[in-house]
Image 1 (tube, rainbow, N blue to C red):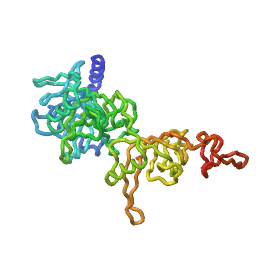
Image 2 (cartoon, rainbow, N blue to C red; image 1 turned 180 degrees about the vertical axis):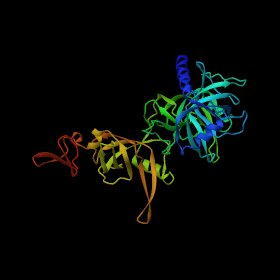
Image 3 (cartoon, one colour; image 1 turned 180 degrees about the horizontal axis):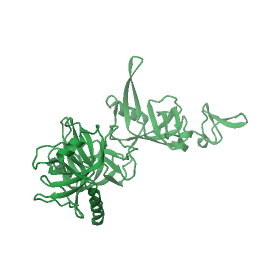
Image 4 (cartoon, rainbow, N blue to C red; image 1 turned 90 degrees about the vertical axis):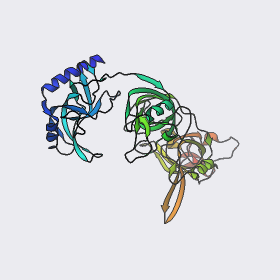
Length: 419
């Protein structure tokens, strides 16, 4: 790591030779000439005193702070955002009162919480001009603690403050955040969820669970409830802008989530039991955990999509019924099984269940469904390989091809239903 910072320091020296040294006041004046969110073409070295220093990020080895021309100023409109304090070949953290020089391009940024523009240098290198007394060292020490201990550490922090020390946590996923912005993202490969020390389900931060905000599963796939996980992070006490209970969570996003054990398989229930479970949910509410439902395909609503790898169908407990109370909406299924899925096939579907309430024709209606993305597998095919030899079937020839007719349904000689 020291060799890396030696390289960074050398690059920093070369960079500052081409940058114009200016005061904080001059940086603000120059930056305000830019368009909103505009970035200067030239690079500057801004010199000033550190005020309102934020926590040092052990994950990204950077820190944010504000700067002023006068030591001890109460506020400033210039920020060093996610910058890298370096002295020689070592990375240090800045303390309030340090005098530093930060090099980079100026950016005019609108701060919504302060309702005003501030000028910043983002991810710039910083050198120390002078340091106040205090511990500037960055010591990477990872302590292994329980989820309960992490919650205690977080609760003792000031509002929106973070630990400088990082911790290794181990636990079990107790609930998933189903908000679209925090559910598993195929684009960013991250996901938000709660973790507890023991196996459980439904528990959130207020009920003794630690919130993992946009962690990156090492498997690059959604983590289900019950999965055993391990991760390393600094701890933050987040208080929402509008107030409310604090949330104890990881300070940095995109921390790596190591999978130690798979979630236990959910108990398999019938279609009727699944519908009753959906009825117990509130209007347009999803279950907190996944369930497993076994039943027969009553009707294919939307054929298999090779583009999205899913299919929509209705399920029933009664083999041969063409009506089903439970819809499997855009269920994930293999292409081999999805293209051949037919009425009468018995399937196992694993996913969350939802109680939907909607208006149609001036009336309020209800439906019960397995949510999009549930995983479907075929347990038994209603096809010729399942026909008992003593069972009477009819053969027909259509356009020179032989088909089998069973229970009013047409099958080809490979056993797939022809629809």
